[in-house]
Length: 350
Figure 1 (cartoon, rainbow, N blue to C red):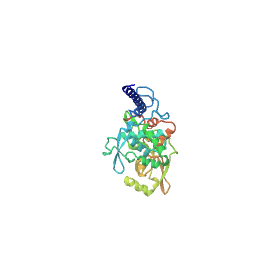
Figure 2: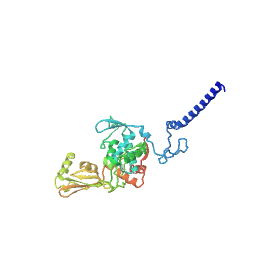
Figure 3: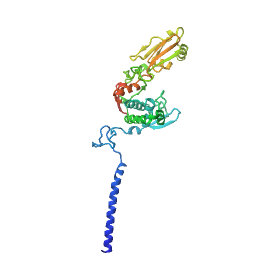
Figure 4: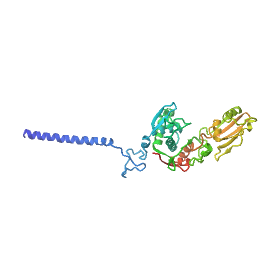
């Protein structure tokens, strides 16, 4: 064998080995390269690729219909904090913080989803408005919506932090970009804690009728903490509070005669009540005497006034404890929202 033949055969062997190694490397790294490519998206709820072909989830226990939150992730919220600073958050993180602050995380997931939709809708209406020129919305529940950072919420939840945090993750992702619409437009998605059998028509509280904020039955009851409360006020305290806001009231004579007969709605809430010759709405009386709701009775026991109160909040829109009761009975978040917001639909905000 000549040196050239030997060299050629040796070179050919090296080429064969090199080609084999290259093939092995390609086969080894091909899955890695595929994973680094563009993600594959499925149509929500179908388990199908965009071309209609079926696909199995990578994790057999995973829900292929669970949204990824891409719509909310793509939107920003400028939040005015209580200390006056303004923070920019993704809509996902903001709605998570609102749900954590506004509704008990122990609630049913469908109730948490309903809360996420209501909070997202409320935010959408306020964005671009003039309520806070420097921000879209504030973290004060008496003005806009309550908000808490994730670290603070998890510290409050203690040993349940992981469980509750993941529940809220699912509630926000499971309603990604969804809100409550009336005639195609986002509504004023008002909500409150608990009702006394029925919610309150907006006209009774604010004097303006709103088509989707009507009185409806609400199924919560004595399972609600502090569902029934009592506030006791002395005659002098009632007089001072009343005259400070309504100086025309006549609170002379026997205190037993100061309050007249209240006009009530179907749920037992006070529509109006006479006091010292003037007439207060239920909401005005609630604010004046710091009552938990406008569903109350008042009596004089000879030494003080006793206000017996049921429920908590202004009573308009979605009852949070009512939503939880509905969810326990099998209602979906869509069922809950379309029940409490008369004539509304659940649809995409963005």
